[in-house]
Image 1 (cartoon, rainbow, N blue to C red):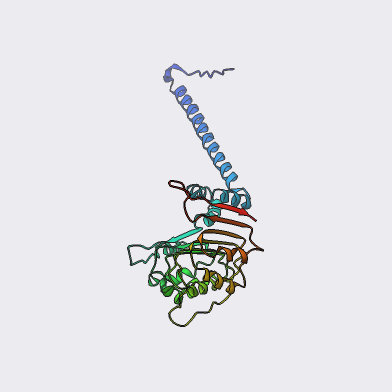
Image 2: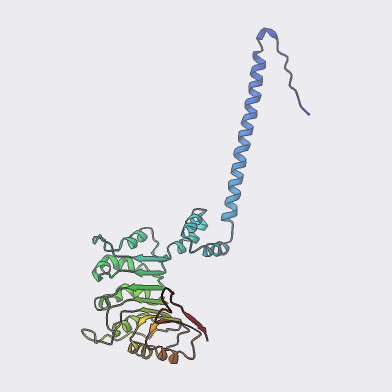
Length: 307
């Protein structure tokens, strides 16, 4: 039903009152419509915030953990609300890589300095140190302050490490890692077996160990011999690649009171028989790579064996 508004206005006033009354009606109706629009937008915004911020924290953490490898998605989730931002922080800053920079003034410590300013170093759980740092470039007074804040490191990877210059001054810097470190990877280390064993002895709760190349025959270290401080657990995964130092495996077995790895990944390894005999009671999965390609143009294959 359509309603009509009729106004009786005297002709001597030239319809001025009718025009003024009609203008007021239109104006107030327009204000009411605008007010309703803003109310609706606020209600929708509050509802969306309720959906995102009202979820249980355990459920939010499960959602964030599901998209962990996707950095862009994690950054988008961090901007949703405060609870999602807090849940994404450990995943966004889970891994930290230190690479050698051309700018020697900073010595590769720029990532540590940047995270320290916003108090995010305790979230780092995986640390990679790449490309043959000199000890003085990162292990100095400034670096010691940053390393002391890395209290939750569980995985450590060191590439092209000069053991002779690294070992004598490493303990104050790696001290915060010692109780919690579970995985250590050495990529092409340079030094004798005894220094590698001493480095392993710094981490009593170490489970996984990875060694890629770098070790030759046993050689005596320069200076007095270093005695390992503890015996690592070494009950997780062993990864060896381009490895030809069977004497090191025997020394490692004596240090830890016998090898008890549950998983092994071997690629061109001498001493495989010793490893299989030592871990016969604990080994569950063995992955073996061939030493040569099958044929021209064929990629190398691997075999996995569940025991």
